[in-house]
Amino acid sequence: MRTRVRAGDPNVFGELFDRYARSVYNHAFRLTADWSVAEDVMSATFMEAWRLRGKVTAEGGSLRPWLLGVATNLARNHCRSNRRYRAAAAALAQAGPAEVEVPDHADEVAGQVDDRRRIAVTIAAIGTLRRPEREVLILCLWEGLEYAEAAEALGIPVGTVRSRLSRARTKLRKIAQAELVAESREPARRTRQTKSDRVTAVRPVPEGSR
Image (tube, rainbow, N blue to C red; front, side, top):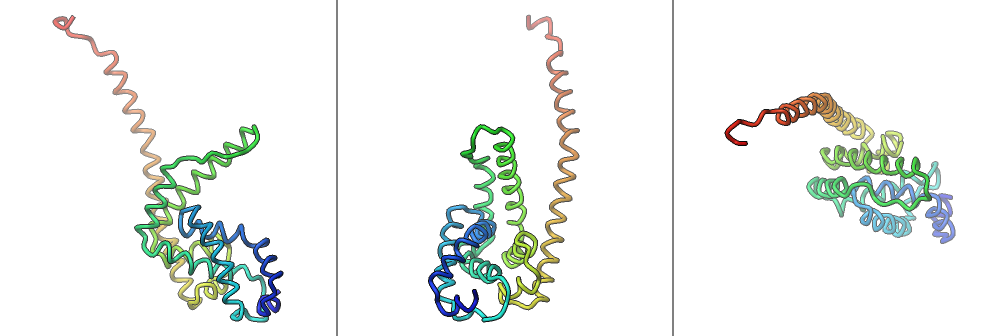
């Protein structure tokens, strides 16, 4: 396939699209937190891949890491700052579960709603990372690339991939711990609020106010 890509065979690019379009689209969303932008990035990725076809080496494995690297570079144009990424993540979280066109199978619908919520929470947490850390984290942990594949996709040394991933993991671990502490305090807060409401409800009315 690599040889055909280098040769500019239009049929092989159709095969690449059929095989990797969904993967590129999902990757673009994780990088931008915006489904509409992700679609634009996905389309641009395959056009850019055609332009860069001569840079594909004749030997190697799957072209997925290369395509994800192209998509990552294109996504940078849309989210050059964490502020823009965080704004998109916040909008996603506030939008709530999207409507899903699924037959009347309650469990399946509920599962998709829960997935949407988990994605929103995860994207918001990833938004706390610097862009270079975010890119490495998504490629290695979410996309499952090896360190060497991520390094090739981003054009950086393997050691840089390792250090960025380590920093990203440390930051996300602190966020997760803070959320666990907040969740553990929530039941106690609700209990105190309930007791307070009960006391207010049974408080006697002064004689003079009757």
